[in-house]
Length: 338
Image 1 (cartoon, one colour):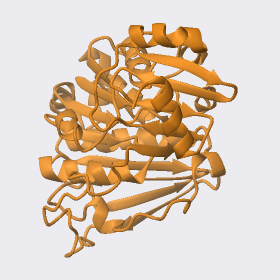
Image 2 (cartoon, helix red, strand yellow):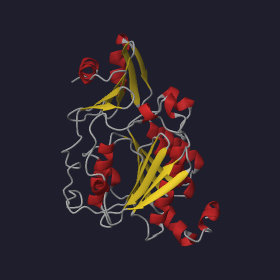
Image 3 (cartoon, rainbow, N blue to C red):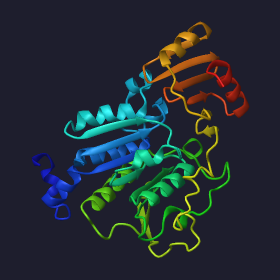
Image 4 (cartoon, rainbow, N blue to C red):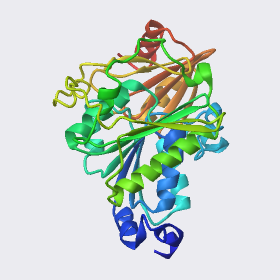
């Protein structure tokens, strides 16, 4: 407890609250900028069990804002969840850290979230947020939303059964190409630290039993230094499918494509029936055909100039260097298998 003395001396937490934090399990979905910042704050706060979930590996242009990674992680192609867990273990060796290298989807999200006290949203796309909203509602687990792009950030806590859910406030997904992305608008490096830090504070408020958490959408302009909040506690939509117990995203009715165009000119290929990949065998088979690296977590293969394929042990493949779904599908069939 002495380690957390400057925390539990705060009246809102106290010794009893710190004990609750130490006994808690929190799932962080996404180890990008927000996930890095929130998970670091939670590890330092003493959350006893952190599950870190991410499907990707760090790249050089992540390092301005994804504070748990360094150039060595980029060079080694260590999955973000694994690299984050290793770094957090150096920060706090007394907590349990479970890295999960996986694409969050309707088939696995319930098992990932099961048993969690709180979930932190560190995702980078709306489909996953809607899926998280469905799963959290079904499991009755509170979750803390966060977003950061350009100079703007926002956060809010959703508590199933108490006030609106995410889909109440954002009932419709924007069409493809609508809205800014990190690639088109950029993001200030310090902004996710502020938003992720506040997400962590919201988590701690939930864990210690603070009753007033939720119902407020807070927005931050990091460039102008302004903060605003909107009381949305009474905006629960009568026709919201999620609040009626109709979990459309969880049932795979939306956003469950086999090929998905990701940010950064990359296509993700998902097998219809996910089968584990024997990375050693795949690397040996591809070695005569081009540049191959196998770090035990993934196989990197360069089939042609400007194209890089990354195959994970769970069967996912990233085809980097193209936004052409047909070409990505063809390369996958040619080198990995249909």
